[in-house]
Image (cartoon, rainbow, N blue to C red):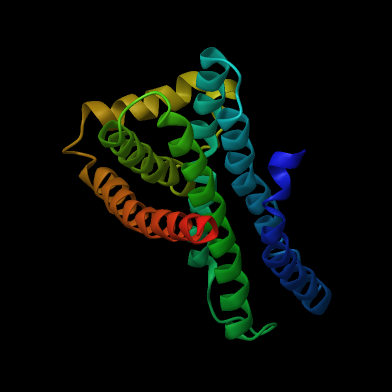
Length: 215
């Protein structure tokens, strides 16, 4: 359990978002935004899987956890797209829903970036910094594609087990007809570049913090 304790600082932000959801439900008698609680749970899973990967005792176990992490990784950043639900509603002020959706999105981004940092630290034991950076950008590009599959095609991470053939049919169509589906790959690329730039900021912050503690 010790490997999870260092993430206790994430709890206040999570509780803040859950409190906003609860207040909204009480105030409006509507469960409209309760889906955010489920999305936050899914967004936390990549962080858990990355820790299991980082502390794996064998290469085969590490690869297995890495695969599971990659499969669920888009769920963290996906929460950003829940901002699509922001609109003026009579029952609650617009600013309240903006804070609610934004806080959930920030939590998701933080979970995703921290999980990616764990994966990077593990991979550096096996290959060079340049290759790790390539792997990271590829993972972020695939994350962008995963966000498309989730937001627009309504696929879930577990559908690779429950509906593998239908999922692979859609993926193959996108891959085999890139020009026809150029908007999909544009979305994936834009999200990939944005997350890569964001991750570099997070990585520098973490490295600077680690350096400061060592002085």
